[in-house]
Image (cartoon, rainbow, N blue to C red):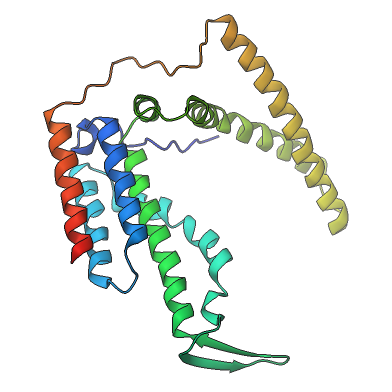
Length: 254
């Protein structure tokens, strides 16, 4: 099976790839915070917010198509939870629709709330996609650890990234075995079969996790992320952090 890793462009010789992970974590998460706190009516700020990661992606040799493909995956989930927000009550109605059983009215306040959620979620995921694409995942975990994030959080991320593909392969083998047995029947039978597959996958994942943890303890695992090269926060990293944070603050004030 083909595995699509997060840090696909971390070995490219670009500008962001040379920056210390701690500097990138601080600046990109600051970017997300500033984006979330900006009112949706400040359209110019959001255009500039988008321009900043586009420039960084260009100098880091990360294709725009890759970023769009990864970041647009969040759109269906956002629509799922916010599709009815434009129909919420408000003072200014911009459109009314007469359905069979009830009337729906689209309000200006509802549209603004909907755009607020959609635009901010996509911009945040777009920026974080650039962060993970240009940083080796092991270095990213090391940066989290150096920034004193909870050790449990770092370990969960580490194991999730390492073994998610193993579970995916396991599920694909189970689905292949199901299809080879002429999978069919009523929809109730199909739902029951798929439910049994997920239950079996959960049990296998739990048992595999126990075996992996026991093997790691036998090899001296202490719960700490080990890095091949020690992280060094230099002058270039400090300059990047100051310029990045200054830029987003100026955009916020426009």
